[in-house]
Each structure stands twice: as C-alpha cells, then as structure tokens.
Amino acid sequence: MTDVGPFGLSVRDQALEADVQAGLAAVEEGLLEATKSEVPFITEAAQHLVRAGGKRFRPLLVMLAAQFGDRYAPGIVPSAVVVELTHLATLYHDDVMDEATVRRGVASANARWGNSVAVLTGDFLFARASHILADLGPEAVRVQAEAFERLVTGQILETAGPQDGRDPVEHYLDVLGGKTGSLVAVSCRFGAMMSGTDDTVVDVLTQYGERLGVAFQLADDVLDIASDSHESGKTPGTDLREGIPTLPVLRLRERAARLGLADDIALCELLDSDLTDDDRHAEALRLLRAHPALEQARQDTVRYAQDARSALAPLPECAAKTALVELSDAVVHRAG
Image (cartoon, rainbow, N blue to C red; front, side, top):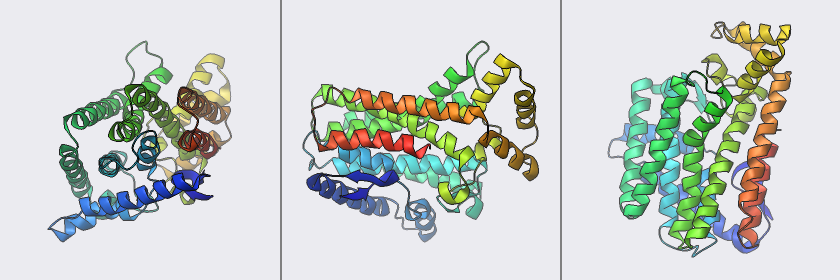
C-alpha cells in the first residue's frame, strides 16, 4: 500500500494503484508536452507551475472515475491533461487578480514576470487544452465549455458580491460550485465518459465531484487562515488581504450580526480596515485562527465532504469506490 495523489491518499489495491500511478505518470508527460512552445520563454512560463508540482487532484479523479468502465480507453489521459491545464490556467489568472507572490512554494508567475505575461500564459494554457479537447469529440467540448462558463460565472459572481437580500453564505457556496465544483465535477465526468460507463454512473460520479470540489475549496479557505506558507505552499491570508470574504470571514460576520458581541464586531472592523498593512494583517490572522467561526467553517467542510461520500452509494463496491470515499475523508482531514 502506497500513497498516491493528493493528501497522501492510500490505495490498498495493487492493481488500482498500478493503474493510477501509470495514469498520473502519463498525465505528467502530457502536461510537459502540451506546455512546449517554439518560443523558449513561453515554454518556461507555461511550465513554471507544472514543474512546481501540485496535488494533481483533478487528474487523479479522472483516473479513479475511469475504473468504473474501460480504464485503458484512449481518451482518459488526454482528458485528464485537459482538466489540469484548465486548472493551471486559472491559477495564473487568480494570482494576478489576488496579487499573490507565492504559488506552490515558488514565486508566482506574475511576481516573476509581471501581470501581462501571467495572464497571457494562462490564455496559452487554455488554448492548448482546447486543442486536445478537439480530438476528444464534440460531447467533450460541450461538457468542458459548460464547465468553463460556470467557472467564469462563479468568478464574476464572487467579484460582484451577493445581491441585496441574498444570504452571503448561500451566495458564496454558489460561487464555489461554479469556481471549483464545476471543474472537479468535469474531472469525474470525463473519467466516466471516456471509459464508456453508462449514464447513471456518469451522473453519480459527476454529483460526487461537484460536492467534493466545494469541500476541497472550503478546506482551502480554512487552510488560508489556519496554515503557514510552509504547509500550504502559498502566502497565508491572501484572500483576507485582498478583502475577499471566504467562509470563515462570512461565518464571523453572520455571528457578529446575530449575537452582537463586542469582540466579534471589533474583529469585523479590523477586517474592514486596510489589511495591506502587515501588522493589521497579522493581527487579523491571529484572531481568526482562535475564533469559533474557523471551527464552524471546518464543520461546513465536513458536511460537504460527507455529502460527496453519500453520493457514491449507488455505485458497486470496488477498490475505486473505496478510494473515492477515502478521498472525501482526506479532504476533511486536510481542513484539520
């Protein structure tokens, strides 16, 4: 039994382990091939985050979902490359929007080469993903296009904020369904589709991926507050500094409005101040790390991960199902 994929996921079945390891190795080769350009500088920029590593969470889901059909079908590895390229492209763009300086333990592309190069490199990766998709058939193109529309819509809704009268937590969870859940769901969908499973299995795995994706992002929200840069590979409190209200902050504001406690109100006022100031930012992180709102956000993460696990109930018992169940448990463990 060895660890594969993100969070040290343990695969107990030797045949499944071999398939997953071989698939992920092929994806890695595909990512390097897809990010090559005749222009050496573009290759360097495009491979910057590929070579920095990463969990390969989405390709792993493609490989596991493919186990419910023909796991050696030719479209499986290319579709995994597509979802990871798409994910990587969004990271280049996100770091520009967030003015982040660290990603995966290395300097972000925007910090190293500037915003223009980072944005255009993300666009280059989207183009390469589309090129691979074209060979996977019109249904794959449609599925990816719909997911990408949801992803962008989620980003826009996050930027615009909730409409008057809309519960901010509900709005935020909808945002996450688009920004993160959509592409994780497609990862599971592609694995099932490309392996030729029936529609029922495709739908079950897609629902699992959607819920797991939200849980995954909620775990990231908790880590952004609770971890240091060594643990997470990126600057802690990035969203906090940019004034982006992630779930721990939304739960704090909800509690402050409901209970009216002086300490909660004071912390909200601190969060509303200029957190580009390092001292204020550090104090806000310290207080949030000790606040009940962080634990409430952890419990929200647990609930979504349990929903993902429950979605798998209709699938037959097998090593791949066990691995998917354990992956949902690993997301919870990651959030602490």
